[in-house]
Image 1 (tube, rainbow, N blue to C red):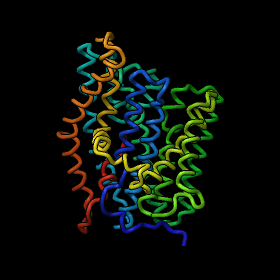
Image 2: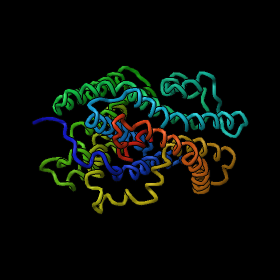
Image 3: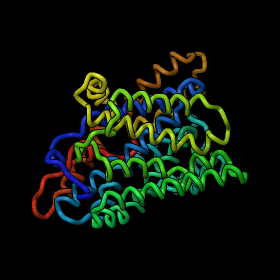
Image 4: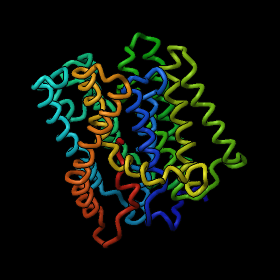
Length: 375
């Protein structure tokens, strides 16, 4: 019978490897912004976050729907607000203070501040060419795309879950991904800016939808199915790795703003599937190591503040060089991220957990799902 299947492990324990994947993604972004963008594709790290967020959020919805036959949309939106907004408020206010004192370049216009808070920062940055926000706060473009997905996708997910047919889910979500790719290709050949093609919700949301597609059709945490029938794990790893290398190495300009994002999203989805389904294997067990799990747990704040800190260090202490600047940025970023984790994110996480308890008293979903979001 072609229906969604939920395994017995769906309601207990953390989803393995995900904090480690989150850590790898934020480290890629950090190193790219540190001056290694010619070697390390920071945008690839953001795409990892997108695919992972789609997978996590949609898996959370499947777990809730299995338990209650509904999705509490009000509770979902409130939990997303508590996850994303408190750290964002703290960081934007900190950035405003640093910019007004001259410690970092740029400034917050009222429109820029409101754009960041109301998650339209991507379109604001595209329209204003990054003016109106302090240097380093451009990372809010990706938060905006995620928030638009959070607003629009849950009703569709509820319809698909009620339908209960894997084939329908695959057709609908694959179709949406094709539409976004076609739209991106049309824009690329009709004069759209690179900023629009790489930062607009309507041109980049397909990466998140790929994660949602995996969560509904072939979920490595809930379904316990073979990754790809007839293809060994090492074969899928090689295929995904080759696709990623090609996506980075092929320099055609149209490809880089169109097909590259689709190819990377599919390859990332395959690797995430393996990392979750084969988490105890030597190839992926290292993703659950304590250092990576910790970095994954603070990755949201790291993502928000790291570029601002890097730019501030380069401005005031250019003599430090790459190694000195990067080392100092690591220390300062951790000095912000750890207090944020203790005093802002953990209290909000406890509140989200209480909010997620159903009236029947069912337990909250796996730890790995509760920390979904970018990063």
